[in-house]
Amino acid sequence: MSEKWLQAPEWSWNTSKEEPTYVHHWVQPLHEIQNAPDLILYGAPISRSSISVSGASLYPAEFRRMWKGFATYNLDENIDLTAFRVADAGDVVMHMTDILLSHQHIQEASAHLAARYPHAVTCMIGGDHSTTACAVRGIKEVCKQEIGILQLDTHLDVRDPAELGPANGTPIRQLIDGDTVKGENVINIGLHGYFNARPLIDYAEEHNIQMVTLKQARKQGLINTVREALEKLSAKVDRVYVTVDMDVLDISVAPGVPASTPGGMTAAELFDALLEIGQHPIVRHIDFVCLDPSKDSAVAETVKTGVYAWLQFITGCVLQTR
Ligand SMILES: [Mn+2]
Image (cartoon, rainbow, N blue to C red; front, side):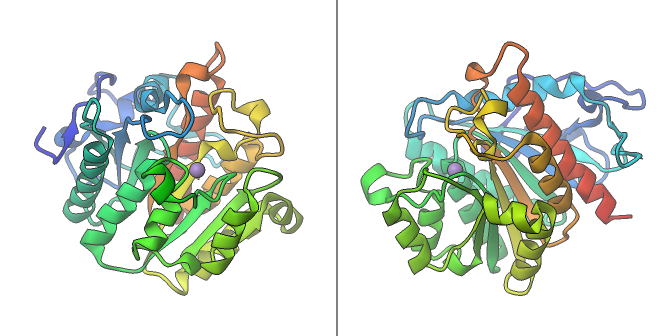
């Protein structure tokens, strides 16, 4: 493969030439795809940069392995997704021990994909949340536009990199302090309860991060809240990067996300949110992070939820083109 810092995934289905009816026959390796892709998928399998012990580096492989269980036909919307071309660019090459070098690879791979495939939506599968800062920096380098962030997360992720290094609790702060993204162009939906210490809220307020608690979102309707957030960002930025920390899910439905908490989103709420997000053309990039398959239940319920969530986003993209 000739794509920068990207290598063939450690695990993928062999694509058949027959008409795809399941996801593992629909997603094509990037170097084999015939026409320009609508969405490019790439894995960022790193979790050494996680504050707590995490096997999120295992997620890209497990994510792909689960495709076999999903049809390309969405019954709820009565649409087949196969006309939408999804290309798999493989996984970013990680260094065995050097986190900063691995982060550099993620940044360069993200920049490369954004530059070479400017019309495709990019979708990164983490990895822990440190990967988001790398991806957004890489994209910013190339597009030189104002980027907004819609973050679905239980946490603000504005802990101090001076203290932790570029770990998974810091990506939003890295991006704001590094002048990559303005605080006022970050909207977080999913905050709740007791999981962000007061000094972190102070930082968010000081930098005008827009915090929407789950409680507020439920009051005005989650879908409306998401729509409003994207409309707000559309007025101020050129493109939106959506980052989905799977710890936004309620702990009862996400055994594979050690950082998930009580009081989080239901799976259905996350699916609704992503269906809405996919329908907005301002959204050019998305990632899904912090899912540790090694902690998942025996029936892999969190990985299944992760694939479903991703397909909801794609369904939204397809609805947008209708
Ligand atoms: Mn996070």
